[in-house]
Structures are given as structure tokens and as C-alpha cells.
Length: 400
Image (cartoon, rainbow, N blue to C red; front, side, top):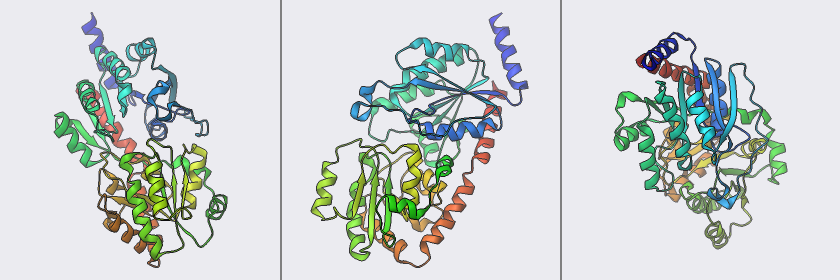
């Protein structure tokens, strides 16, 4: 009888068009992966019925840098006729995991995977879907951890045994899934990380943003935005900026983001180079409603990452604002710029400095970079990405 029921479920899922998809991830007011999930779920709801499985309490506080995990109530509201949001999961109550894993009426589970502490929750929910004959698709945001972690790789490999198909954000990530986890290449699809356009809804003008941050009209502002973590290349950026200042006295650097490591080594570096007056720092989490001020104030965005195996949400925000951007040749960062001239080697302050100087001093170059960013934005527009994702769903549902 159970086998007959499963077969009936499979047949019904194949007939449904559009299917009902359960997306497992995080949504506002939680921070986590919420920016991406907000844009992704809204785009998918244009094409299918979406049940979004989110969290009420996502992590215990001690696992988060600084021991605090405040919510951000400044995200835009989520409204779509075909998007039902369920904020019921709690890290401490397996009964909430069981409810979503074993009683969801969705035809397919699409799990957004990025964080090791979520492993038991994801494992439980995925098993619930699989035991009921429903396929599981993973979008793997971090194929390998940003900071070295053998446990992340081991537990990710265990979780991936439950996956029918895998989506990653770059060709490099696709190859990593095949090589590191032994996933057959036909089961891995590369679909880019879309822009985070909701940040532009509160876009302010450049003059107002700069005035509020006390930048002078003639100053050239270089933005390094996002969580301060070892792999982000803050040291490379500071060393490069020292060289930039000697060529462009009006250059300023703005570093903004929550500390995930000690700032003291960077502060000592800034003091040694006598850059205190020229590097502005806001070392705290930037609420969603304030993000636009930083990007509107900036003339140039840099992502000087030392190493990276994923795609960048910060880079996606820069694309949304059509900002000129320089990135290092690591992970999926090169996909965020149209012109290879805007890519530099990682851990190379000289190359980064020369590129920044060229961008700021060459007449018309910043405008050209804005136009190039427009080309990138069209390539990663959400409607096209949603259609590719829906095609993956339909293919998997037909196979099961």
C-alpha cells in the first residue's frame, strides 16, 4: 500500500505544472542567507508555488561572532501570492524539523546549504522528504568553507548523499563538487548568483550619501564592504591604498562590516602607514536599510579576497548599484566583472594599487566600468535564473 501511495505521489507531482516547491533556507528578519533567499524565492514564485521553510531561531548565540545574533527588521517586506513563508524551525526543537520534513505537501525540496551548524536540521528535513519519495535539490553556496574546516567538508559530503541534483554559482564550484565530493557531472548545474536589487529600493543620491558620511565632493571613495574575515584581504587593501594615496591624494577608503576577527592588527597597520585620516571604518553590522548609503557614496568597490570558493553577495550588491568593481582572481569573483582588466591576482597589493590608480585617474574609465556592470546585471537577471532553476526541478521530478 505504501509503495502504491508513493507511486501515486510521483505521478501527481509530474502532472502538476507548476509544481509546489519547498525552499529551505533563511528569510528576514534573520540575517544569515536572507538577502539571497529573498530575491530567489520571489523570482521562483513568479513561476511556481513556493513554500519557504525558514527559521524562528537559527543559531545558538555562542556560535555567532561576538555572541550576538540580532535580527534585522529593516529588510523589505515579502509579498507574493504564490509564496507562503513558514518561520517555524528552531535549532533546539527537533519537533519543528520533523513537521517540515515529514508533513510538507511540496513536490520537491530545494535546500540552500551554507552553514555547518545547520547540518542536523537539514539532514532531518532532507531524510523526511526522501523517505516519502520526494526529490531533494541543493544549492551549495559554500562548496568548501571560507576558513579551513575538515568537519564542514565531511558533513557536507554526508548531506549530499541525499541530493538528487546540485546547483552551484560558478563553473569552478561545479568542478569542485565533482572533484571533492564525487558528484556525477550530470547532476551538477551552474546557475549564477543573482543581483540583490532590493537594496536599490532605498537608493539615495550620491551627494546626500557622501555628505552624511562626511566625504568631500572631490574625494574618491574606495569601498570595502562586508563582514571582516581573514580571507577578505583587508591587509592587501590597506597596503594597496597606501600606494594609491601617494598618487591620488584625494583618495579615501571606506571599510564597513561586522568584525569576525580582531581588528587590532589592521589598526596597527593603518597607524604605521599614517593612514588614520584617510581610511574610514564602521566596524559593525550594516542594517539592510543603510546598505544603499555606502554603495551610493562609493566611486569604486573592491573585493581583494585572498581565497574564495563561492560567489559574493557583496559583489552582487555592487552589480545591483552598477558600481565599478575590481576583484581578485579567485572563486566566482571574476564572473562579476565584464572586463578581464578589472581582475587582479590575490595577495598582490602592487597589482591592486596599480589597477585602482588606473581606474581613478583614467578619464572616463569609471563610466565605462559602470556600463560594463550593466552588461553583467543583464546576464544574471533573476527571471532567466529562475527559468533555469525551474527546468532543473522539472527534470528531476520527471526522473523520480
